[in-house]
Length: 83
Image (tube, rainbow, N blue to C red):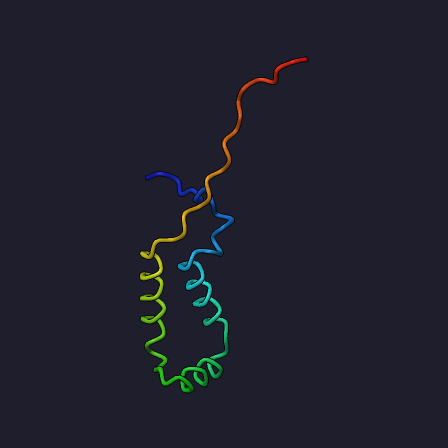
């Protein structure tokens, strides 16, 4: 099995929707239980549904095409013409 490697544009990962959904999951888990319960009650979602909702959102946003990364400008590899 190959050693895991970071993707080439890992610094742009905050722009990926799947990373954003995962961050929401982490932030949600850091909230106190009573805060989670109050927020869910306000929108009418049962607490047992949160993992399924976040998991489904993660899968959907993982499958959605992300914007293409910009192509770097071409490098002129010709030597300088001396004077």
